[in-house]
Length: 197
Length: 197
DNA sequence: GTCTATACCAGGATAGAC
DNA sequence: GTCTATCCTGGTATAGAC
Image (cartoon, rainbow over all chains, first blue to last red; front, side, top):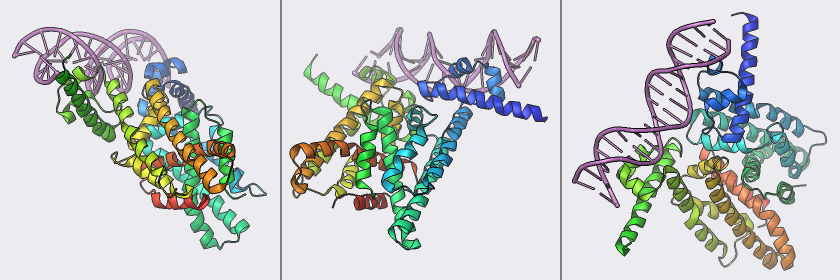
């Protein structure tokens, strides 16, 4: 297969996936029909099925792409010098997480979907693992450097605490997505009061 | 309409709703077909449509019923004497929340559905509000009694902190539903370390 | 009120021309 | 590779008998 064709293929996939994401944000994964994606992308059914095997494959592509780049950004933040305190890391992580994706809605939909769709679940759990690891690495470093724990203790502590940071972040995203009156700043400042400063 | 008929009607609705819940747990709201509910409940299509106007009405009924009783239990716990410490309230709340519903899966599905379905969203947000209020009432009391804050300060503090307790709980349910390797006890003991004891 | 059988439709996927 | 038109499945809801 020629080089040009391959580049083109990738570009087309991306274009369709982006259109699909917009539809998913509006309607949700299920309610979004191929007709919607056809309209939104401007491409035809034939063109789309030339790039994707099925609607489900589009969903997977979108889900995969969605969070992927964000995590790198978030990790960069945690390596800042001076090292941020635990009370100040969740907010920036969440802003990073939501940049680009204007609304956390699609993430919440993804969680719901993951309960019953094995492919989506695999992707979603993979994302959660990576985020947990990210917090864990940061916390281990912090406990060791700022708190004087031995490396082993620091890691053990971090491992216990990381899922909690993940949970608090998820709770934020969920409430932001669903409650019209959610006050994100209050949430984060409330959090900071409980965490080491 | 005669008395007997009405009682019967309620019982029938309940029976169908319970069967539907079992199907939803297995398959999710969308993947569950009327045929599934017919099989699981033993009733026929005609019987079901005699009790419910549509599949969606069944979903709403299930969602409504689902958490309703649990909240009362949870509230009772918070009124225990001696008053439990904040570090020890989330665990019991979650156990209460999950009793009966073996798995938190349906809740997570509900959140995902709420993003795009207005009826489900209304129900879900209502539930979240009530749980937030519950934590808020407890926290206000605790801050005032155990911590010596003025009533006004206690309420303000509680209002800021309650959504955080909700978020942590939601994070727990989400991770429990999706991560096969989730360690709930570690999560809760990690949490306790950050909260007043 | 409940049964079986079925009408009816939405929507994902494909066929065949270009 | 892409277009339009269409097939076909799966699924909700109803019709009509009991």
